[in-house]
Every structure is written in structure tokens, then in C-alpha cells.
Length: 132
Image (cartoon, rainbow, N blue to C red; front, side):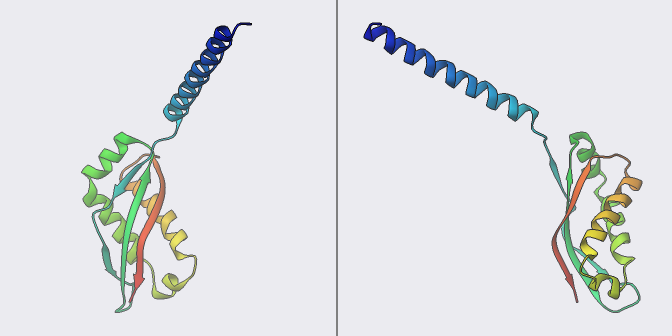
């Protein structure tokens, strides 16, 4: 095989490899699940049930549906009210429990699904959680 044919073969292999890599990456990128983060509008400061203590938290909601994300954004006052209701329902002893954040995440998700029906809430995140 001549040198020029070997050179062309190598170039062709690089081109085909690059094209396959590009198409594979494009396919993976298109099929990757997309998420939308709902900012709940700042801190929550609520009183703790039956005490003079305060709970300060900052919460974000991870969603999988863009349209439902828009609905939640447009109805942020209902989202905040639902979250405040869940937070205020907890006693000081419940809030001191080490697993309280996981419990609250589930309760917030369930309450939000009651207020604004849908199943696109993937997770709830506490960016801040302070009891004083």
C-alpha cells in the first residue's frame, strides 16, 4: 500500500471516529434528563409550634417538567404558603430530631402536590436550616 493511501486511510479513520463521537455525544445530551430549579422566593422565617423559637430556612425545589415549573413560579404565593404551613406544624422537639430535614422534604413535596397537582417535583433542598 502506498504512503498516500495509508495517509488517506488514517485521515478517514480520524474523520469517522470524530463523527461517531460527535453523534454519540449529541444523542446522550438530547436524552439526558433536564431539571428546573424553583426558587421559592427567599428565606422562610416562621415561629416553631407552641414555643417562642424561630425557624429560618431557605428552600429550593427541583422539578422535571418545564410547564409545571412555570405554573409553580406563577403561583409562588401558594408555594410559599404551603411550605410555611408545613414548617409551622413542627414542634421544637420534632425539629431537633436528626432526620427532620428528610421528613420535611417529603411533607413539603406532598403538600405542594396537593396545592398544585402534578408529579414533576423531584427533590427539595434546604440551602439553610436554623432554629433559634
